[in-house]
Image 1 (tube, rainbow, N blue to C red):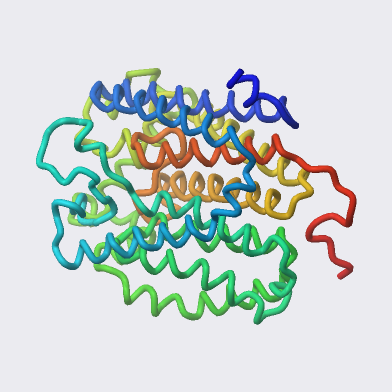
Image 2: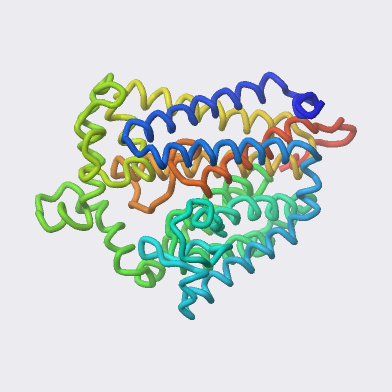
Length: 394
């Protein structure tokens, strides 16, 4: 009865194709993690996938508009979690807000010193939650408005965007911060904001970018400078700041057209060459094992999911549902492009995961929730009796 309720609704074929593409991405991620020999992480990833599947089911038990009605509360609650995280960071509450990899991104729900996995896994990453609650709040805010077609009317959406960005960049978490503005511009464009206004804001952002650069931490500046310095022969850079990027490019290039095969190749056998090969740099490991053809296959699967989200938006006549589908599709696309761009030297190394593939609980659960909301929107398409949403004479 429960499964029947989930499958009921519109666009069943489209939803099934998206789910099958995600299952394939999950299988590729699991195969890559298994290939590294990290059996503990492999088992944990299986557990996160099971929990994510439960969240997917839960988010399809009611209409997505329930989330819209609660979007303001969810967004404010997320901002409170981000603020608590920063307070804990600066006051030194290490038992509640641990420092991991030089950043304070997690809140421990059980502040105990224990090696037990369940105790250590009982933590939340507010920046991951913010990726979804922000899209919910933005779509709900814009659903019945037209003032964003003026330059002054864009102040509201931008304030809504800058609030979580400022809190997340202070953790620091440059990768997640980079997701918000592209998602905002895509949602505003689909909603009907004037292109000339968006171009003016982009130009102002480029002019002000040096100010943000000098406000960054030194290691963040090094990551940006590495884009220019990545082809240097400087041994200090190759063994220091540029090590991960340099090894990632070698790992990808060594795969050739078809790769070395599953669980084969030097970057599979030795983790010291690419320490984050199961997480942030898992795309490089995929290229190493399955070559260019494998990479194209992964990109094709992501394309199915993203185009599916766009099709859901185009078929929907509810303004909130349409913007929600566009925002989630944009978030998945931008995160995928940033991660892959990072591994090949087109983007700074940010620590952003590859959706559905990289190892990690918070990112994986967020991706499952995004898929669940997309399928929910697809199921609950309403009949249209008036002019289409976001249709303007000019």
